[in-house]
Image (cartoon, rainbow, N blue to C red; front, side):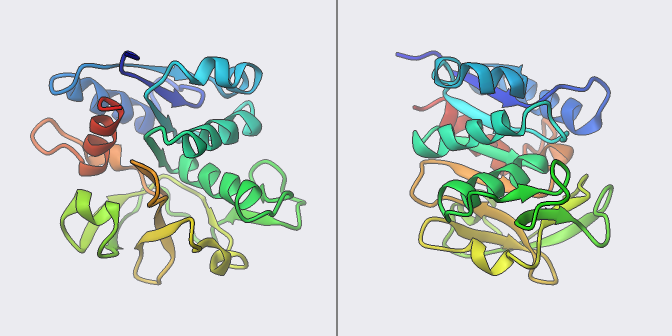
Amino acid sequence: MKKNNIAIIGEYHKGFEPHEDLNKALDILKDSFSFKYEWIETDKVFKEKDSLLNKYTGIWSAPGSPFKSLEGALYAVRYARENDIPHLGTCAGFQHTIIEYAKNVLGFKEAQHEEYESDSSVLFISKLTCSLAGKTMNVSIVPNTLTYKCYQTYEVSEKYYCNFGINPKFSDKIESEYISISGVDQDNEIRIIEYPQNKFFVATLFVPQSRFTRSNPHPLIYKFVEASCNR
């Protein structure tokens, strides 16, 4: 039986609040679940691929882009999606999930992220006209989704650290038989997506770890770890 190990995909930056909050949330959850976690740099993922990722029972696509290897970040998302490995993407992890989905499910092979290739004509992720960095905003949760089952409420308040999001030009391409939009903001902009056919596969543009506490663990993170420890 595989040991419970969670891979955090991204380059760790000491002192960067979303990274410190992520570590703190997982450290707290060690009181409830038996698992280890480690940060894996994206260029290492790109070089080693399956031989590296097959050691893990959960994958968290982290904030903090641009990363060393966009291809490595995307490969981790694809590996989790295709192998039904519990996956949580937050902030940049959400953006990379959208790019991976556009390339490998929707068939937009040239899909790009403006932070990495600003001249691309197929920018599924582009710079927001108004930065969300540091803002706390309400998110409406769609009924009958895994996200709703986690939250058990129709509206939540979440904090953002991002300057990039889904390009409005492509937003109508996102929802399909393979993916569900499970959270939107007051302007109906997509803030949470999930793959309903997977055990746990959720990505959020916000950073749920920012409001994780020992007395009030964030439901998405709790359920992600629970799924990662029950494979």
